[in-house]
Every structure is written in C-alpha cells, then in structure tokens.
Length: 135
Image 1 (cartoon, rainbow, N blue to C red):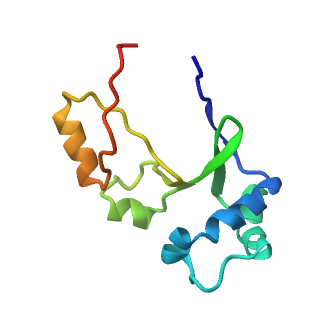
Image 2 (image 1 turned 180 degrees about the horizontal axis):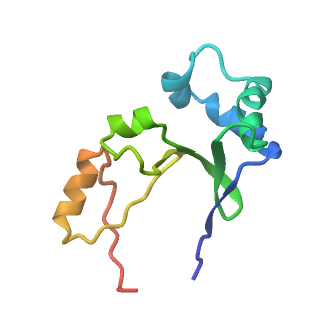
C-alpha cells in the first residue's frame, strides 16, 4: 500500500522561487495581481522575507506532499477590529489562517448528506465516487 505523506512546515528562504511560480499562475493573478505582470522573485522576497524572518506577525507555511511543495498557508492574530467584525469577544485571542493549495480532496461518508451539501455550498464539487472497504 502506498501512503502519501502530507506535512506543513514553516516557509524558508529557499521557498521564494516556488512562491514566485505559484503567484504568477493565471489563476492566482486573476485575484491577486495583474495577469499581464507576473510576480518577480524580488517582489516575492520583498513580501515574504520579513515574514520568514519573523519581523512581522504573519507566519508563512508551505504544505508538502511527499516532500514536494503543493500549497501555501499563513497564520496571523486578528486585531480587535477584525474580531469585532467577525463577532468574537473583545478580549479573545483569535487567529486567522489563509490557504492556497492546488486541490483539496474531501472524503465524507456518502450517507452524510448534510456534510456533502455544506461542502457544495462552500463551492466544492463532486468529481467521482470511490468504492473502498472500511479502514
């Protein structure tokens, strides 16, 4: 049996090149830039180096599948204004997380209609049903 290994690790200085590639894809530029102006390596370093160095309170992570980078995540503490906007109590400690991965695979039980409908409302779509035995 081949078991894939997914891991999340803190971003390193050696990840800037893969970030520049990801940030320069058509799909990302559609939301985070100009489709006619891909991100340069220097632009990526300017943005993410302070985060990697811990100079600002946003912690970047790389998601890996079998040691191959497949996604990006970052965490940050929400300020009081954002906490209020989302309805959290003033003195709570609340963290946000942003994710950017190529694909997310969900594996709900076929009989869990509520979960499936919830995922569909969030924009997920059914690709195929896989028949397999219980774990």
